[in-house]
Length: 131
Image (cartoon, rainbow, N blue to C red):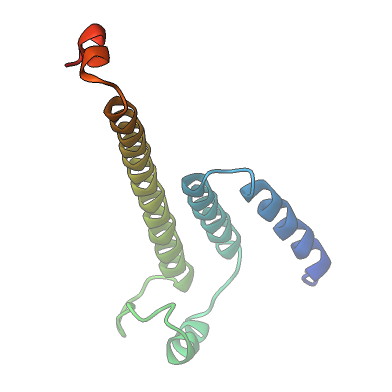
């Protein structure tokens, strides 16, 4: 007999992820979210989802909106693809955040350099070889 879902256990798992996420950069937080989606994917693959469940879910959710009426694939396969795609897109977002973060950091350093150089006299700039 299957065990019932214990919300106290779920809350403890959630707290651990949340505490860990606070230690990470923004991009790595998104990567962690992608990993959590991958974990959700692994968990959902252990569930038996009937075709009847799929059709009912199509009426009440967007989970299976891309499934054609004559599609013969198992419902879990469609969820697997959806979650895998979503996790991949989260990773892409994290990569973009890294690139933007690097660009922003470089721009900030350049602004500091320009501000520092603007305080130098022409004589000081010539002495440093940056005139």
